[in-house]
Image: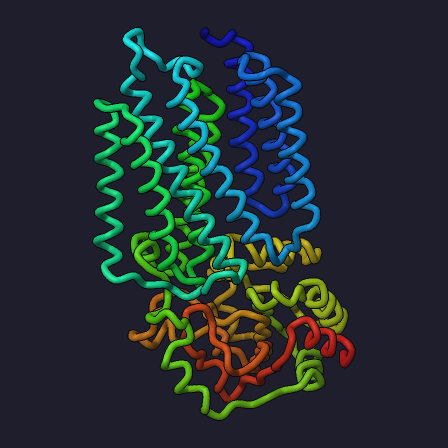
Length: 467
């Protein structure tokens, strides 16, 4: 049955609110407002759908919402900010799985979805929508599961290179497309089962060769996939709000992936084809060979003295800060320095951390003022005037090999010019580790560098005591 006019208007209002949500999320200062717009828009869309569709009884729907909402609430309350990337990956997998289940439900009960023709067959156009939705959803699910395992440390973060992977991937993708086309003429269960199974497999194959350094792009890409899966299911369900929402999520995720690839000076195809690092070990032979070079070890007292005497200090946080949960102590150190008249700024690389905006989220959680946080292109020229570059848990994003070593796997990626600062303090757990790219960092061995080895949070706490 056609929807009443008020329902169409309600879906339109939801779409506008979703667009305003994306607009609000483009800035940390307006992100809370953007989240509220998105929540209100989704509430309107859900209520409208429940009122205009007799898909189940209200008690059944209420029970389902209570179960799912309760699980989501508990997880969101208990999850640590450092575990946010893998939580995002896990939620993306659920979106993909939901798309697969909706597609299969439409296949087994097409009459309930209004796609059954009088001759007892499913509308050919709906079969294409169904096949695409199931395929994209299955890829999103299995790819997100692998991303979750890598981010959670339950699977190696290094690229896992399968022999002949490009041929296997292209062949599998071509087979999925061909089967989706064939599905319009043959709606047998064998065809839809083959599409589903191959899509689960290709999602797995696409993500395992991607290394940890490319994980922020992967998370963004999977977000885009989940949006397109939802949009495809929106056509199957004849739901305008779902089509709008899926298209917004899919397109914004794709744009974000492109922006992040550009920030890394890498093509999107190269990220999909395989991650940083040339071997499965992820530690790199070159990095091991360089570890015997002389370096200087500093102390918390050394750092406190030079930081206090400095005029300009630039702090570069990375994933190590997130693991140590050092963002609050770092902000406290910054506040103490500002009280001493030191100009303190925070430099954020677009791919720092394990998901888009990871460092921004952590600094915002620690109440670091937004006007003290700068992106790569806005602050890189200031390192030449900086008295101290304070690196806490970052590695690849400050590695000068990206500018000078054409054989390096990170060559061409824009990095911070920390080597131009007068003094560099580099906090890391030990000299034995390397970044996710698997290469050593020349900054460790520079004359102006002092290595502060140990847990990031404890080291900053010691610096605060000395200050």
